[in-house]
Length: 301
Image (cartoon, rainbow, N blue to C red; front, side):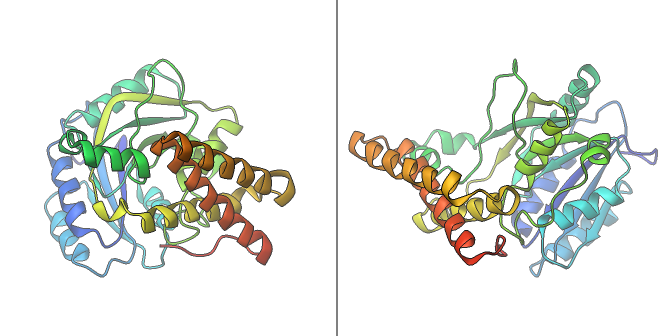
């Protein structure tokens, strides 16, 4: 990183995850530099732990580092503030609970110089030690609450996952920024999914940068029945916010289908498929409550 205008902006929205953020920032310091200048922008969304102190020290160490403070809750709001403060023509978004491979930015730059995609999804892996532990891997696959993204490099992506994604600035100019009614601190989730859908709706395509890899930390608190249920309720609330599915045309038929699948896979002993169906039961049940109450998605952490 240097004093020239940045061509790539790395953007991280964070809140109260100082330990995870410190690991991420360490991995960014170990990045191999692409052939163009880049900057790193961290949007602190009102952290009350040691994150502000950590970021103050990190910011002082190098010029191409920016901290944006966004006290009002909302990951989408924080990300939009970081976009406004950025310079790059490529905007690379990562979550605060991942670490990057050393070649992450090099791979991103190489891909975008060879493809005219509006955006691209990067690979998200679980740690090697988690994948090597059969019991832990079973829980990761069953609950599905810690993201893992592996796709065919031959086909365009159909969605974006914010743990590791890149967009051209032009894409934001065309479709607008993140929906601030979605994501953590608002309806709870899906700010990345909804953004990807807007890009596809205007004819943009989403690529897949297979070798731009990050590794997601495993927080075992997310591998519980309680977290699983709330995770899918957040998905339901968020989808209701931007889809407004009809009760009779969509929500109830899908709830009935999910109930049948849950029963079927319970009998067959397929835990992964059973939990996918179970998640959809929470998902559509949350939508029914919102439809019944006649209100948009409620605020969620």
